[in-house]
Image 1 (cartoon, rainbow, N blue to C red):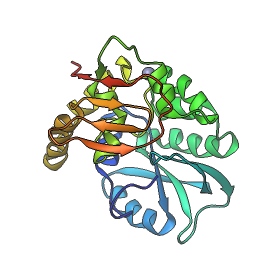
Image 2: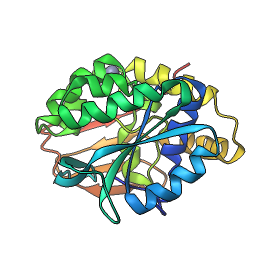
Image 3: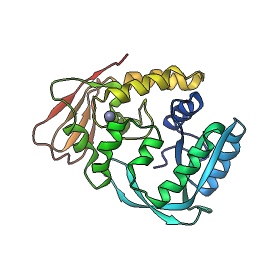
Image 4: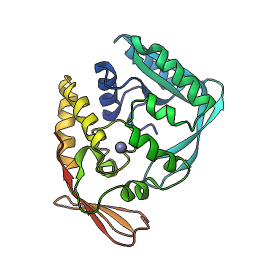
Length: 247
Ligand SMILES: [Zn+2]
């Protein structure tokens, strides 16, 4: 889902992904934009030596999750005007990888190869198959998370509900304690040089560290003034997730 304030700009999460692409720790970045917004973005990114590949299909939302994530259906024909298209961003050396992804997502939108080619950890790609078939992502992540061990800050996917905070590309880690995701986040963060992105990372580290309490009908970020999102989580036993830094 396009979560940036202006579609011609990149959100902080997309800026993190782009840093990963430039540093070689993510092969290709996938963006969802209207054709009009994509045109503006392409001009900016091409100036920075990045290739931009438009998919030969556009998308419409066919299922949205109450916690703000949308699942899309592909329609033949490149996006135009205000239609939403998919765009793949890569270093020049990965131009072919971007083109392969553009074709693959059209011919086999449910293929786990898409997640692999976007650089997501294999454990998370495998777990995503359930989510894609309709399972609730929170339920899936909780099921894969140990009740006795803390999670990793980088895998705190719930902090996105409380201000959009994240230190990972836009995917669902298999669990809140996925060490491959935490490693990947560290790798990406170590390659960031942009001062304003570093400021975002510092603020995100603070936001991601607050424990999160999950009850049957709400999710609470335990900040000094707790933030609550009302949501039917279907869990029968409340859980409080705490977060470890990972180094
Ligand atoms: Zn994983």
